[in-house]
Image 1 (cartoon, rainbow, N blue to C red):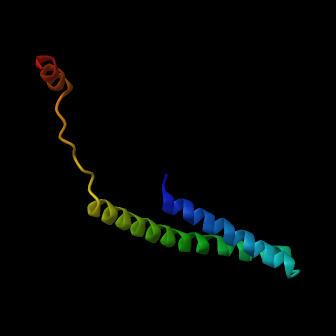
Image 2 (image 1 turned 30 degrees about the vertical axis):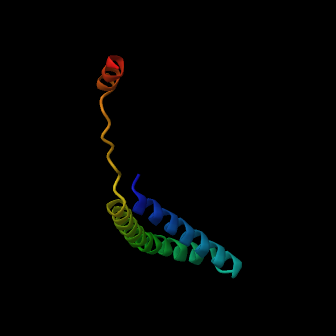
Image 3 (image 1 turned 180 degrees about the vertical axis):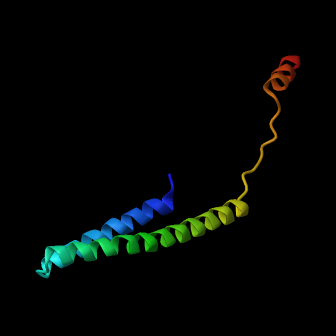
Length: 90
């Protein structure tokens, strides 16, 4: 899934819904309200796309810093066959 595009779509649809709701609530003409809402749609998409890209960059940087600061320890265990063979000799 492409997170920045998903965030951009959410921004765009929210902007469209807010523009339609504000236009209808204010008692504006339907054609004017829809025109303004359609103009708002790509603008909010672009803002959401930039926000999504920034969020992904910050999140990726944070995850990489976290992982580099806390490496996963490696365990040096003996193979099961060696352990059982030594136990049988005793």
